[in-house]
Image (cartoon, rainbow, N blue to C red; front, top):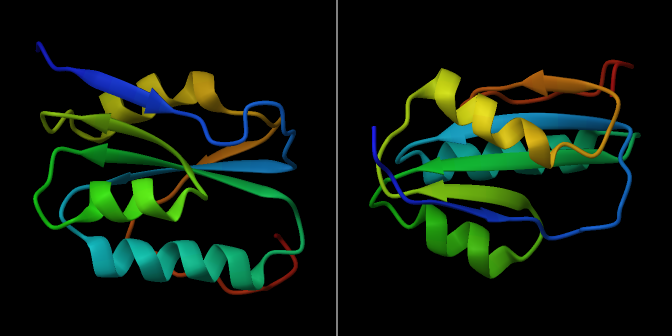
Length: 111
């Protein structure tokens, strides 16, 4: 699959306790809830890495304008597995997990 992929690390030298890879496709509202829940309910330094798979709902513009999250953008929908693999080199922690963009994180002691 030929696709233009651009990587946008925001905090280049920062080290995190935990990294979360979040692929998304046309789910801006759900992604915003997911990222807000991570920020609100985490006691650790979390690095969300958003993989914007194509899309036309304003997700790319929102993530770019927020200037808070490391992200990748692909002009084509890469699918979940490939998206996670190309995002993994951006991880700046010893621990990594994958989350869907429609997940909501509660503070239960893990984060």
